[in-house]
Image (spheres, one colour):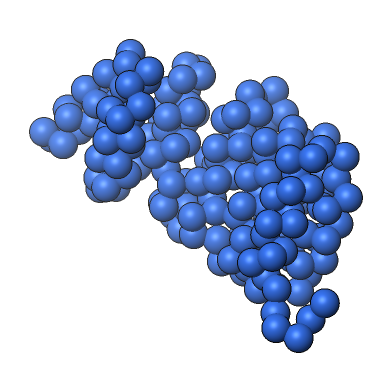
Length: 168
């Protein structure tokens, strides 16, 4: 119970003082280390009406994407085209912490869909960084022709990490 009170205080205070970068990192670090009851509260905040709370909740859900309910909530925000690009990108990043091969295939469409804002496409590339799937490599090559420079650069950077000795 005390943990949840601490959570509410840290979360609410963070929204009031998000200009303090050092404090922000500290608060997010504390929140990402708490138990399943905090995950439930984060999910409620992510699904709530307050944009700042939603973004912070998405940041705090990093590393919890192996939980099916977290995946579902993150995907719901990503698919909401009315949601701010920054929130959608953060949700993709939060998925990426635990990208497994099957998850990588779920992230690929967010990169391929040019209707997604560049921030979402860049975040999707970041999720694919450690995937060794040949299909993912092909998608990254396609992203090198993206109309947005930032997306092309991230794709090239990621392909560099994918380079295998003996390949061009």
